[in-house]
Image (cartoon, rainbow, N blue to C red; front, side):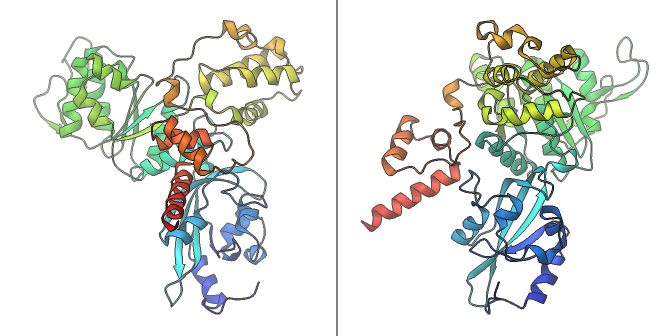
Amino acid sequence: MAHDPSLPDMAFLQSLVDSHPEPFALVDAEFNIVVANQRYSMTYSGKDKKAVIGDKCHQISHKTDTTCDINGEECPLKRVFETRMPYQVVHRHFDHGNQADYVAVHASPIVNAEGNVVLIGESIASISHGNDLCFDPDKMVGGCCPSFMRVLDNLVTVAGTDAPVLILGETGSGKEMAAQLIHRKSRRFNKEFVAIDCTQFTEESFTSELFGHLRGAFTGAVENKMGLFELADGGTLFLDEIGELSLNIQAKLLRALETGSFRRLGETRTRQAHVRLVCATNRDLKAMVAEGSFRADLFFRINCMQVELPPLRHRKADLPELIDYFVARSSHRAGMSADFRNALLNYTYPGNMRELRNILDRAIALSKGEQLDAKHLPDDVLHAELASPVHPVHDVKDFFQYPESESAPPSSGAAELMDVLAKHQGNRRLAAEELGITERSLYRKLKQLQASALKN
């Protein structure tokens, strides 16, 4: 590839990218890699850093000849060249061994002496290697369906703030693991992550567990105990199923969250702790506020940044990969029948990821080393009328299912865009989901239509 005379010499560019500890590359407007550091090249090609120069960035990191926006992801390169502003997005990359890795891609504009953007600097940070993505005990797995990618993008975004986070999701969808990811990617990663299951305590035991107690404060208190609120000082406090707390407990919790002050049971001294709060629930807290079973002031206190985890039935495109992953990590090597796989693909999974894992573990145990077959599955998986009902956090119309096709979404004309927006009363999130594109892509399409209308 010929050197662009408007750019510094290659030796200078190489020294710049070599200074980055993470995978880093400079890419031009035609998606050509101009220069990359050794970490980038070894991660995605397994070769020396000079070997990737001149290759397309999507060929190296996505292992595809088409650009990432065509494959359903937002292209940071196009975004930076359009806006001249830095941009971050979550992508699914494939390393040189073709292993999937979810990464945060931070793209920055590189300008020449005339002030024109001539390159982007692409810095890549893994968010799934090193056990960071733990919706599953080993790692968070999933395909590239838009709902899953949007969740990852949201989790990484909120992790960079210190604001309270409310995670919504059905039973088994991985709310605690999402909270752990937020903690690991936050500035508090080197402090404690303290999880509390709000369903397990009475009012007295919850207060003692959260704030601690002195010896003799109640029957059975034989020694002083530090509470979990204090233990989480400087770190993250995760309250799982916060919708199960009584109104009295909610009042005590609210005071501690607003002031950072608390007292151990039996103590007159006031203590201080500064925690980052992450809460989770499988209930509709807004509806609970309306009916008086959840405090409005607590709801507004915890509902600063909201992330909703998609139920597994909204991630049908991911199911084949998830099934293969869970089977592969077991000792089972006899394969599975078409009937077995089809039954799993057609099931609604009211228990979500946890249920899928349990179904597969049960089938593998029953198969005794033979091929996995439909006879190894529970009756409710084989017969839809026996399946347990699903319990969505919101009505299905408020969480539109993404298209299951893995092909690129069709381009949408002005009439179709406006019809879909009208159908969802102007809600861009729901409109984008029905169209099978990201909200950002929908926004760009609307801006293009607006610009076109002004020209005419």
